[in-house]
Amino acid sequence: MTAIVRDALLPLFAAPMTGREPMPEQVDQVFSGMAVEVLEEQRRWRRVKTPYRYEGWTLSDSLEEDPARVERWQKGDLALVIPPVATLLSGAHPEEAPVYQLPRGAAVARLGEPDERGWQMVEAANGALGFLLKESLWTLPVRPEEFSDLRESLARAALDFLGVPYRWGGKSAWGIDCSGLASLTYLIHGIAVFRDARLHPDFPIHPIPVEEMAKGDLLYFPGHVALYLGENRYVHATGRKGDEAVVVNSLDPAEPDYRADLAGQILAAGSYF
Image: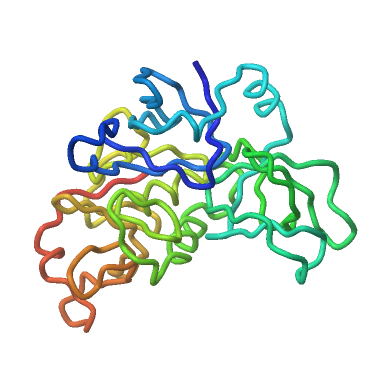
């Protein structure tokens, strides 16, 4: 069964909560408007699989499971939210009241055409109505071949999250982990990569020699992944005490932001190109 995520940002857990044991680990977050496959039901809990084949448990209250409503949503004029955080406004003017906030990666349905100033009326998956500027939306499905410089676009998208706090299992500007940053950056460009911090043969990131890395490629360390920016620099979400945010570091020991603990443990480099 297909369901649509209703919440702006929905956590997925390693197991359903029972109330009799510690809270299970958050393994991922999925976005409003995303279609997921329901694999298993346990009372109010659902085990779901995402379009990028990651699985986790979430509450049924946060999902639209009615087949007719799911079909209506999927047949809508869907677009992807691109700003790290987008605020739906009650009217077509920047001073209108905020209605709802959506993270990068959420989908909305466009209603009609944008006005002459570029304001587009949209509907969120939970039914909230509001206005966004058309420039903040990319038509779905997004395809990587649509980008004139995909490598540059990937790098810019990852750098948008500089300073965002580290959060295990996070995948938004409210908190993000290393593989969340990498997977979200590729996902909004129409490329599904493995959600965990390692190469996986069933996904389109293939191993390359480290010395052949170019901007936009992925760099793997033990339990960690970063996006390479070129010139020996990389951007990543680090949970190291004292950093705990999205930062840029260098592979060059002569640079002040060199991370010897990472540079000395490179496992692999991966590329989509």
